[in-house]
Image 1 (cartoon, one colour):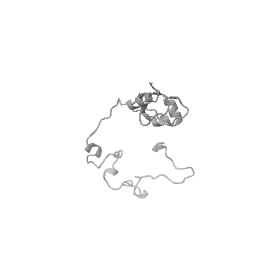
Image 2 (cartoon, rainbow, N blue to C red; image 1 turned 120 degrees about the horizontal axis):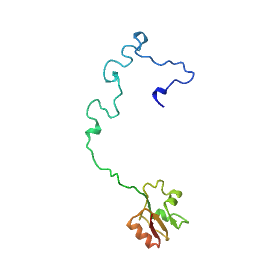
Image 3 (cartoon, one colour; image 1 turned 90 degrees about the horizontal axis):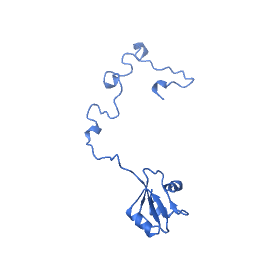
Image 4 (spheres, rainbow, N blue to C red; image 1 turned 90 degrees about the vertical axis):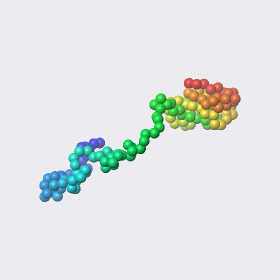
Length: 146
């Protein structure tokens, strides 16, 4: 929807305000804009960061930090959550999404080593932490990198 597409509701008898059509209309001379000043001028309104001419906040504060464009964010799951899966011998990202353990796969799945495994399980993921690998092998399972 655009501002030029706005129109009154069907059956409405309200007329649009016609400004600048003489003093007899009640909306003449300054056209309901008051006297002079920035808001009485033509042209677009000042932007959201405008502070009346003083240096805006986003320019006053120093730039900090760095955003690595090549970073990859993994969806993570711990071994204690994988151990809660019943009736599954091979754990894949699709199984975890289907069971509701993860919502978004992002750049892949990473398995972390919090908790213990009580049975041997084959886990297929994009990355494993060092502690997760040792605990999976200690339980008799396998870790496969996708």
